[in-house]
Length: 330
Image 1 (cartoon, rainbow, N blue to C red):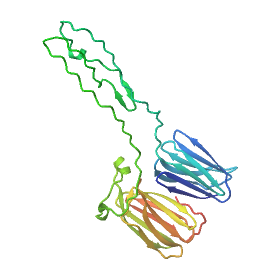
Image 2 (image 1 turned 180 degrees about the vertical axis):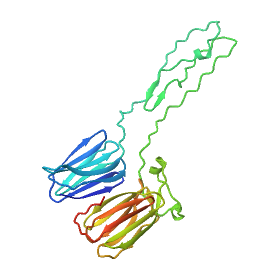
Image 3 (image 1 turned 60 degrees about the vertical axis):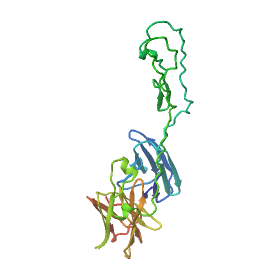
Image 4 (image 1 turned 45 degrees about the horizontal axis):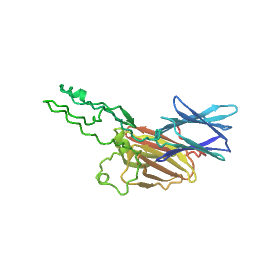
């Protein structure tokens, strides 16, 4: 049986950790229109179906469902915005699908030396005639393409002898400077060190990733923990509607809630001191793209569900039930 699906987001990769109850031999294939990576787990059963939003880089989400009942085959599908390289790493009952989310650079041909068109002019002996119009006095150079720049009609004609005439000869144009090709490298996200002045004053900052999309980040305003009958409720308030993805990790047991496009000014740790929930930790997980991570430390696995409503989100953990390898309740 499939026990657990865990999604880990990095700055240059997304890893999907698949945990089964026994040794598994996965088989991966790539499909297009739309682009996706498919991993089939033969001999592994699964109840129902799940969808985990990711929205990191070009990885849009992960879907899990029973593909065939007899013999059982569980299928894990990673939806992509465009094709990306990946590695499939099976290790006993665990399978790791690592997707390289770095932007692919177009493979360009080896740049050649920029060639300048050579114009050969035949000088004719001066005769007592009127000079030709200025537009005809200029010799056009053949266009030469070099990368994204073109040496075309910008090249000037060579000097020519001025025929005797009462009118002055046209002045030669200035030879244009050699073209320069600028190369833009992909920006590398860096984690800021101390808190900036804008953060300390409570203003919202915009990362380069969000500025490119015309977005403004939100801010986590508060995180509160409340005890309910047979449940622990974690309530999160932000300055904008929250988009969250949930997963679980083991050894030790914990629930991971990733909040996209929101930041917080300083990390929080909320001790719970319960028999089932130990603490709630909130910290900045990624800077570009911006992700704040909420980690709930558990004594043992428990079912849970996540409910979002506008700018608030509630994670409710059922402490009255102990279920090994629990999954989010839809």
